[in-house]
Length: 132
Image (cartoon, rainbow, N blue to C red; front, top):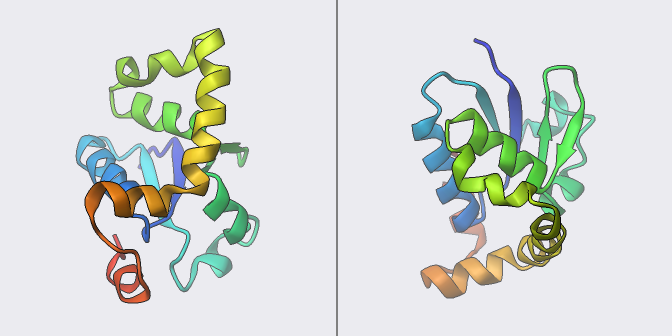
């Protein structure tokens, strides 16, 4: 496999899980490895990734070991599955500054936003079922 990104995601977040499901379907060339930060064996496989920080802000890892964060991960992931045009606006100078701020707010409140949008509570049993 020629993976170009390890994407560390929160499987307990319904919106995050939905996006990952969509990315997986589009990732026909398997360029992305998807790793649930809440998996029981996560710390032993990725000791260099702090679960709490990865829960606070999206983390990704490039083949050379470099860790990228937030919208840089989003941009790269969608680009790798051939949908760069969907996220190209995130690289525009003024938009990128605003988008990064909005992303940080979204990331902090994503569970509440998920519950409001999807009318789906986020609870421990829900989290345990979300192993993607």
